[in-house]
Length: 314
Length: 278
View: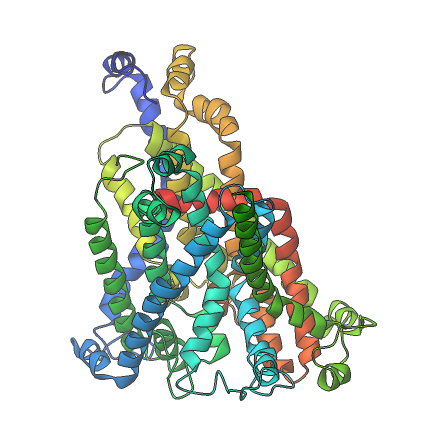
């Protein structure tokens, strides 16, 4: 809600430059923004530029960077098979998130619906994994994925049902799937929460009107509910993609990117070069690639999503 | 018609109950493991922990070399400092962005939204360089400042949304009554925005408390370890003793779960506001 335009204008007229009021306002603006800007420039913006600089050197982190190599780091990364695996894994996790995790979350949000008795309890339970730290989630999944059915619950269930136990985290074909299961366990509740909020914002009357006009529940869902959820779905997709690209803790604790790099992500790759091998120039170049991917994705996303939104009208 | 509705309800509860079981399995397995002795866990891995054994729990809480209480204290200190910093710094900045006018305002605001595109997982190596230059490695202040800095963008956005929703008439009235901008912020806006501040605080507390990456990179000495970092190290050191590790993990999850049950409303409203605005 905005006030009448005339009133603020009067104040603007009174407060010309140089008036004590104006000075006071400027002081407030300066002092209020100062801490945020200092912290932000120092720890978010400045590091970006610094890593651009270091990415041009072969630098082990001791003394000043002197061994200038130009764009070699960037070239070497693109020809490193492990980085390409990490990139592929990133896209796989994105795809799985978008085509498995989000539909699952949406389905559950719709199942809980608007008026299911006990919906708040379901929300509380489903959201619990999101609140637990990634360390705890990773360790719990490490336990239940143990290859020995006497120790790993997942294999115990499979054996009980007549199947063969699997080395979930030791098999290059299965490891990413196992990690994705843990990721989904941890994050589906968050997306479900977003969808529940989105559904809450759709007036029940609109769906009611559809029903009166003769739409069945499937038509109602695809022609009314889904389009009206558009902005929520877009948000969810955006967060999902950005989250998938930079997955780190869960992977690092469960597999350290192994076996034989099969579960490497860009973040574990960067961590390995930066903090394990201390090839800081090379690691910086990986960071720059990740920055660029995030930036390009965000810009494309923002360009694509500037469509009219049914409910908010933005 | 009524019958169809009943069938739908049963179907809904059936599917949702399956998911409830899936959510609980890893948690319950861990709690069972924590309440058994090492031998019991090896011989009966999936039985109920009857009678419950509290030895592991008391051992972790009582043995100073496990550092549990010290990690708890470090985590608490980091969490409280970060939350205080984020709430204060973000409400100041959000006030300016929602209620004041100045040249370059849009430019400055866009600068902060840029931060949303660079999550800490991507920026950690560059941030490490800066911390090293500032001599903040192996220092809790390094963790506090970095966590605070990376919480700014999202929370400024959330608070700006809440502040903008407060009617402009209030501001006009306050100015007519002779309030300065600071008076208005302090006496009118902040009291009205308490629910939003609570949401931001609850969300920040969870994120800071759970963060592993920043402590992992910044802290070397075990006397500074936070709970997530300590949990990871504990698993590395005592991984063979599954029941002991389970007990440690369960104990380190407990504060979060208790906090979640009390502050669910604030956490949820902070997250949904953040996602919708972002």
